Image (cartoon, rainbow, N blue to C red; front, side, top):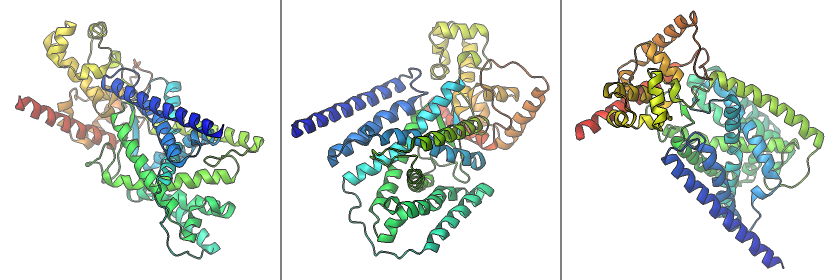
Length: 463
């Protein structure tokens, strides 16, 4: 009977949501205990069950089928990394963020990146849907506006100008990248299907959907930064003027960008829907097979190009291994591994005295080992950048704290240039590309070292 089928679906949804909450709780436990590989993959482990919880919550409130159970879910997950990679490509010029401690092997690294980016669009759609189910914005109306064709052309031109200014002079105009794509793509959506266009909502004086998308973007942005803060493999911002004050990893003013990005993601995805290569959220219609295949091939080619660019311009370090830490002898590496301390992050949390007792390493050497590992694990420095710091006489966190960023950056690159004439074989699979570290990265390292050294001083003198 229908009521029994509905009850069964509701019960299944409740069980699925409960299981997802259990997975989220287990993920947090494994991160706290630093059980590999969960800390490196934390963002993925945390986000996918969170999507299920958001979807089931909206479905329960709204009495409608979950979005993730429809054919459109595959479209959302497939196009999500492609859409975000547009902004990754822009970041090659903007240099507003970079990634640290990603998986060491390239295939694993790329799979992890794509799985992470695949959550972006579903998260925004599900958050917006949850707000709609809760009744947010249903009465947000104003007087209708009369739209003329030249208004749409002007909006697109404004979006193009904003994007060009951000890319031509990123130090000054980088914020304009957030919102530019909405103005470029939404007029296209308006001309093809007005019901999907947010500009058409403004024209009608209907502000509810726009408000929900922007609030959903802000909420999801908070979750992005929250999960990122606790992840080992994560991004770090180097936003001009805003590096010193951060909420999680994001400068507080930067949260303004999330609502604008949500509008952009909506417009770009629905432009793809207008082209009939993507399904609208909750949609079940069939798409032209040949068009979908050809577009998919182009999207894969684009994704490969951008991922290759990220290897050169955006990925700063990979997850460190104890055998690669500079300053450690082969005998010390063996002792650490035999003592169950193969993870540099576990060694970094040890005291020299405890490490000496557990491994049999002499106390003086244990101090050097701990300091060397702490430098590697600080703020995404990693083993190769730590090796460069060792080459210019910076071997401890507090030693890094005493350096000035710009002279240190110059010294590191001079040392790398000298070393290029006498190349060595690296123990690791990942070598920072030419041009890294950037001045911004070195500023981040020095700032983190000064905070860590000050905190260590306060703890020592309070005991």
